[in-house]
Length: 325
Image (cartoon, rainbow, N blue to C red; front, side):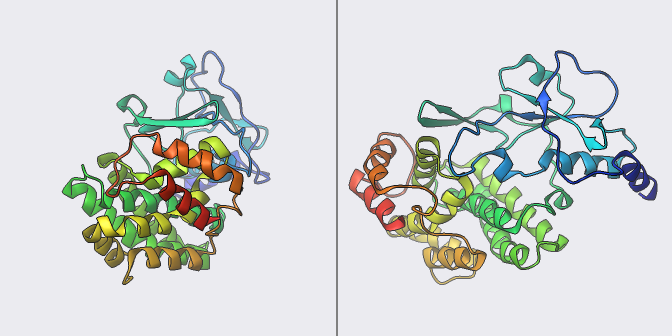
């Protein structure tokens, strides 16, 4: 480890802490230094949503961490780690030495002003690495919002009609871990233990997501992000307690399990209090939703097919969004 650490310092001596802008991937990769490719995200959104918001310095952190833990030389430009950009339909996606992306195993496409999502084994990785050290520079506020995004996967898995016992167990463990870890991350962003527990929760939520269908909450969030440009993770956080309250009469057993996992008497109230502890806004208006957007958003939500324990009319969705303004 000492040798590896010395190698890392040698490779990145003089590093200034800001990743260089990636260039598009070349037609062929030289068989030499290790380099990361990042899938190009659609960042033409308002309010800062996108890769730079959700995963700031992700390429830099992984490159530096790789150089610390191995003897492999990492590609660089000057004293800074190098990386390339690749689109999902570029042929280089199959030849990149290391492909970095979010939401692995699923996909989302913003077509015009609407977002479509799906799952396909073709975009699933063979290996996923959870390294808490890669998250240490992630701002606490981003960690908190991203953690609530993961919690939303676990919550919706709890009442999904196709949820297996494995999915339910993973979801419950995820909520238990995240509800303990996220306040600790906000209080002590430099705590490796808190970051490690948060990643355990993220992993459990990912397992739950893979094995269970998502419902009303996710459909609303995808509409608000894809059509109206609201930031993804913060929107999940703001809406989750309200959708949980809406679904409670139709899914009492699931809500009891959620409440128990987050050490609360009531699931919706517990999620609200967790948001407040994390300093996350509960206002969609603060995230960019306008009152004039509500009718259009409700129409898009009810026009879609999704699994949910309680049927939601256009007026129900309107009420949820008005309450969240």
